[in-house]
Amino acid sequence: MKQRIITGLIGGAAFIFLTVLGGWFFFALLLLLAVIGFMEYTRMNGVSAKHPLSLIGLAGMLVLFIPWEDFGLDSPAAIHTIWLLLFLLLTVTVLTKNVITIDGAALMLLGAVYVGYGFHAMYEVRNAEFHGLLTTCMAFGAIWASDIGAYFTGRAFGRNKLWPSISPNKTIEGSIGGIVLSLAIAAVFAWIYPDIISISRALLIGLIAAVAGQFGDLIQSAYKRIRGIKDTGSILPGHGGVLDRCDSWLIVFPLLVMTELLPL
Image (cartoon, rainbow, N blue to C red; front, side, top):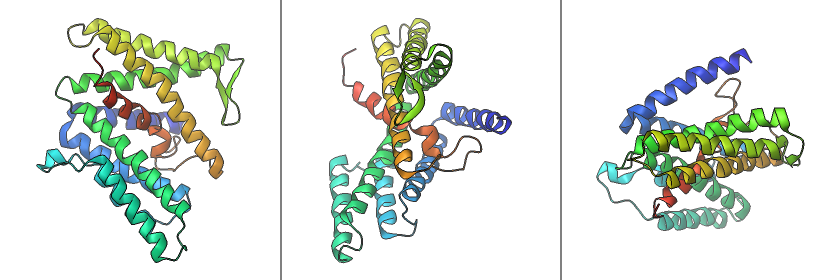
């Protein structure tokens, strides 16, 4: 527990510091997390980092992650990138005469999109022209509030299991507690910055952070259970791997990018 607390404090402080700095500092942080996260993903699936599938998947993940406009380049359409990645992966299955199977190709495509676009969305939200830092801080605050609320509410009042076959310790009561605290934190941001963010948008962000964030956690828990592992990695002592810590973020931030289209 001591190691977990120390790692959490140091890692959390470094993450917050680089997030506030933004720009290339935040980009470098996310790039590092994305590469490590994708390597964890390939290892979870029993694929070597030097395997052709891993190398093609990593390249596709980076194309989806990199903010090309910030390098003065036109951003390739995501659908074109995904299709080209699909084509390359399927081509490998043909060239190897199915030694590399279509199942392996599908896994790498899934991982590239999951990790690549998930971290790209974090960069996009942070670097939005209209108060990107505020939105990012509110999103992370709501995500962490959901985790804290679910944990303590579950311990105090949890009786009914949420999804015992995937995550035995999570309860319905805890989930509701997490949603309530996440909405409360989002509402506080709207109260402090009423001229910047409306209460309706704040509550939408809080709801997405809680509900989608909890699904992100369950998605990773389900995958680890299928693979028979406890953690995706060991880079963070006491906390597991990058995907263990970022599972909620990878689902929440792409949805936040999509909500920018809503008139709230």
